[in-house]
Length: 337
Image 1 (cartoon, rainbow, N blue to C red):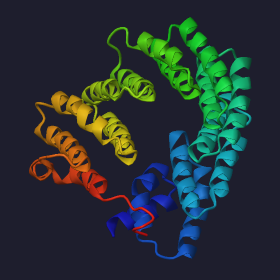
Image 2: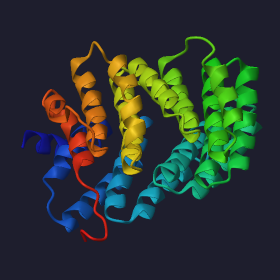
Image 3: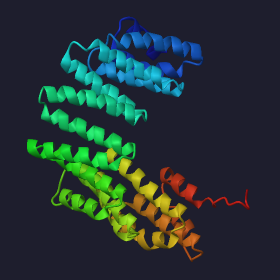
Image 4: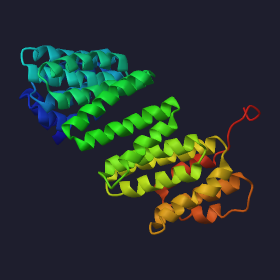
């Protein structure tokens, strides 16, 4: 109740930061759609009076509510209004265009995102801001990749890479190499992709860059059906990501998605033969070691081989069992339907 009152007071005095702080709690108490729409009107008016990051954070929250109502265009319209408000101030207008493009990107409209990023690119070139130009080129490239135009994506990312190199921006230069590797992998040119990954992994780097490079490296090995090497890359990524909780969650999800795809394809022998890579990597972590052991034993079970699945499964922490439980379920075929 206290949070509800705090939210209402903040809304009345137009305190954007406090509104953001209590918004989720307030939304939980709304049961009727007409109440929600009434709140949205108030929030939309507030956004146009917020300053800096708060305006865009609130716009993002509003857009998600409209997306839930299947009216995302109304959420996007708010970003357009913010851009229109700042048209006389080039710096603020550029920032507004970035957030508008990012919103289109976030809500799955890459073609619209490209249009706005290109407007932003024109402003950046006009003021000769090479760093922002390179970043925007990279964004446009990623959206072309989303549209399936890999040649255009590669062309633009390569231009971004050249600018980052010219500027001495090593971190973004390496990120652009990872993106190029991924694009070439998607194009079926895995040797070219591998060249870029080797360049990134020449020496120890920023952990996020190393992790993402290892994930693309695993994709490349997987495309060659070299699952042992793919698992080695994934295990290195997972171990490196342990230093950062958010990065670890992202990497672990990538690893489990990959393992699930192999189970779905019925590649039980490959799983049985390669999951030891993870078991050995997590030798000193009993929970994750048991998790990967259980997956290996499940693969043996699926092959009809002698296994210790039940014994190992009992050592797996509750929070990790859900993934294994899904894999345990038998596949539904036409006969069972």
